[in-house]
Image (cartoon, rainbow, N blue to C red):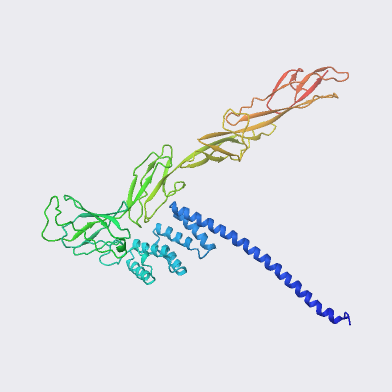
Length: 505
């Protein structure tokens, strides 16, 4: 028996259809939202990678402030970016901003407790800042985490001076008062100042090869090459700087007793004053040294012929000088920044009064061309019946031709003077004075230069005679039927609008 359609069947099918429509709509919405999220995630990732690359480039070029800005943009987009946080810490460390560097490194270790580079940078930070208590705690913590292979410094025992632990065993040590100890590490000399009578010191450095030299005026210098086996880098033994027993000093007595040991050991990185990169020819100082965290001397002067020296900057393309710069943990090159001011003198007329204005273009470093914007030209009124129109500026006091309009950008390589150009239209009109015929109106354009506003007028050749029934043409009269009389074809010079009236008899 076939089923018959009933109201109850229709009521059962309607909710099913609505449910299917609802499921389809939700599926479409889900697809749109997914595509939207994918689009923004891809674009956000591209921006993050771009800023990260910029930051690493600025860091390599020692443009630390720009590196910080780029890395902060990465972190704003990708809060957990370890490379950006490491780069940010390195930039702060280079600027001797130890507090900011420490905060960034500790945050990295919150995210990744076993990050090797963060642990190594943290050790360097505490060593450079002289915070040996935290340095010792960091090393202890690393051993607990099984990171012995990343420890840069050994057991911090004995006398520690600015992070370098120098061992001077008292046994067999000659008097070295007022002497100098120099450690040459990778062709760079580092030094410190130590005064102690009974001190026992040790050197703890990661590098396994370096040279120690003891110098004293009047004595032969003592030099010892130190080569520590790789297995001993982490726990470096005490190094005796005492000369061998069979080595003798060249001159001077050796006292029986030991006075306090004074070792002059000045640590500094090199500062290079590059005056030539931007075209300079000399400087009062070409190099110097400074210790980490101390302000670099920015007072040396540089000279570039025809330019003004404004100071030093780590960015050779800068347009301003640094007011202060603390020494970071590496060598620094400073570039001399120069500027030259070019002037454009603009001369025109306001009403009937000559006006002079000055516009300045500033060049920096190796730029050879500046740009000025021509000012709005003043209006010249003169004493003519027709107004003068501002026609622009010309760099020639005799120019009456082409000119540059106001607000035009003009490149300049030297000081220049511009002159206002003005134009006026002068018309000659004919009045038949009773005749049915009048010659056509003639118009001429007069141009003047603000360097010479003398108006010599325009030359008109007067029209031929015209006719009038029962009258004889006599000539043309200027500005009234009784004015100065001219013959047809005469030459007429006018500096203002004029009308010629026919004269009859």
